[in-house]
Length: 140
Image (cartoon, rainbow, N blue to C red; front, side):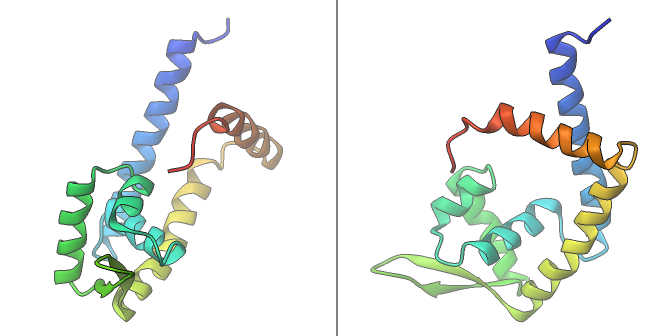
């Protein structure tokens, strides 16, 4: 009997929560949380992004991202630099760049382990199906 849409939605959420728990545990060895590592990743990938843009990319309100950025700056992971006009941009410090890069292998390892039960063909199909469900989502 096929799963109901409600059951399917709950399974997606359970998988997401499992990823978050495992990623937080694995990234803790680098001294960061998933939220911090994701912020480092987005700052690296979007060097001219505003605080508002980074907040949207990391699924946070502006105020929460601002507080996160302040904590990361105090830890020496990022620095604030002048942007156009009165804007302030965020840039990774050498330590932040190291943590981000080290985290790439950690994140890839967690996902590889999580999806190991699927064959490569099943992984590709799963990715395509999820892609169809989020393709209409506007980019942050």
